Length: 117
Image (cartoon, rainbow, N blue to C red; front, side, top):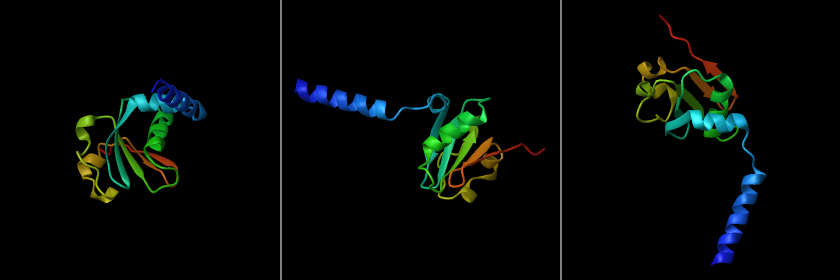
């Protein structure tokens, strides 16, 4: 049993060492949390006043590379819908109006949203 645990521990250590996490991605994972997801839409809460790099790192981590996946980002947790819809257009206007950014994964674009008054 000890040999099996030791082998598992060594294999896990090697896996972690083989796939290092960037500092920006690690910081983003501490600063942003996925609240809900569907196959194409991710709802994410991030701490206030993060920079674009942190948003992008967290959003990229939430989606598979090149896959159609849009990550909606909010700083106000109370404005995020409870459940991610199948498609973006099914998000309530009150929620999209309160979002601060959207990451469009398949084109690798971050769109900052501004409040309209």
